[in-house]
Image (cartoon, rainbow, N blue to C red):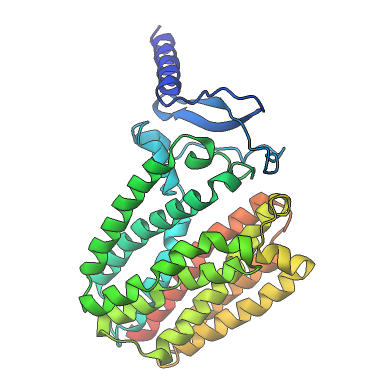
Length: 364
């Protein structure tokens, strides 16, 4: 009886949620799945379908099914009304936060001058990466909502599916940018760091548009995501030493070209239909050979940035990180989304290896 009551309560919660969030919307053209309402505490997952009209001026949605979703901590613990905002900020997918964070930590560790990196700075950059990565995702989805609804991997995102409106996303973005400003103003050498951090905002805003106009959107992403290579050093000294931050930034950009080109191969079929561009399409069958070149540039950049602390332990760690990149490229199946997504997430290991190598070079 207890189990029956639990199931009944779970079903009622789902029905009420569907009505409250207006997940069902009539259409004349077709339908697409937009979300799963996961009632984690009751161990059930229910699929909600939304009927939506697609613009006759644009291409039809992909016939492929969206990627299967699994329950994350967002569905398990956050209130239902908050979950779409959390997914808009990709709080359920932390890898992006780490990819933004590692260059900040690399730079902070490199600036530590034969000691451990400043723990307070590491903490501030951790909060800043979490907030600003979420802001970047919100901006990206606001620009790309009409495209995302036609791509199998992205059509369940909150804006593409209609769970959230653009005004609601704009409200979230305001909160995110305010929080990011708070972190920026908490850094040492505040005015210099404020100017340097604000200089990255045009890149943050422009990146989502690049896939419409250039074959190199991953290059712009790399320029954006690795801005932290400047910030850690600036927060430590109130200036930049290009002998260190220059090669560190360049290595991060090359690293991003590797991991995000592999990631972009997941969407290449839909991108062709929509007329979007990427390095995955531009490199085509030569992807692996070209990415090996970028991986080599990444490794050389790491060594150049660490030239003053490159003891054997540091070099061993950097070599391990480079070897991991080579493994990603060599073993990736460019037509298998699971293979590509796994290798993309494994870059958390690459970033960690580089950070540990720099710390070891400074203290050993």
